Image (tube, rainbow, N blue to C red):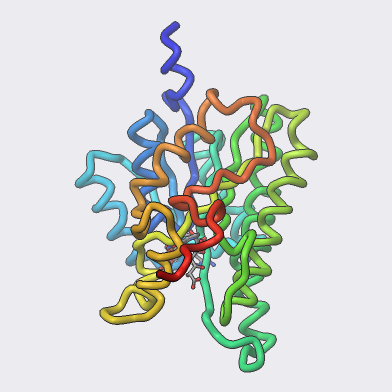
Length: 262
Ligand code: NAP
Ligand code: GCO
């Protein structure tokens, strides 16, 4: 057998949440390139249909489903439908997420709860729904999309950091609970990536742009392609003894104390 066959996803079914665009779509395209059959979800019918056309244009026969990752009944029904229509899910990427950039003193409890619900409860609900099928099938892969904010804080992102910090520990905990069933649960922690979610930070002249370039040893924003190889690795047999690991793809941010002012 060729060693690289360990990275093949041929015959696998991969579900990527929130994959109508952004990081989710890039990860889905990478998993497809490695041979996986792609299913994805989003909140809105029109976005799902539009995304299916975009996948098709890229030569990928991806099927989209409309459901909210925070609504457990809808998730359970959708997972059953996906299993019937596409096959049992081998790879789950919990990518769907939101951010609210509001100073903590101004953030309402409702705002805080919404971010926690989507970014932390959602991955739990999705993982809990998929795990029984993976156990029955003899194993699987779950990849949670964490963040720099799984490790660091910054002004205005208290809810998001709490959620992503929690997602790091949920990843480690589920890895411990499900390793005996040959389910590997890991995370990817992207640095600052050029997507719609960070577009406000990249507006012309926004001080954050200069700041983050200075805090990144690679001295650039990441792009979604930077995340594709790590995702294929964690989705493949090549990572069968990797459990509870958060793979940071950040251009060196977490390794860096910061540049001495000239
Ligand atoms: P994005 O462009 O805002 O896309 C987020 C996706 O999640 C959208 O497709 C959105 O669908 C979907 N979504 C939101 N709430 C949902 C729900 N309740 N149920 C189902 N789908 C839902 O974000 P992104 O930049 O690609 O980020 C994707 C993931 O990476 C997020 O978890 C984010 O926290 C994380 N991340 C991003 C960066 C970065 O720099 N961009 C860095 C680290 C981590 P709608 O469009 O229909 O709302
Ligand atoms: C922010 C950014 C970050 C990125 C990402 C970094 O406002 O600080 O949105 O949170 O989205 O999570 O890893």
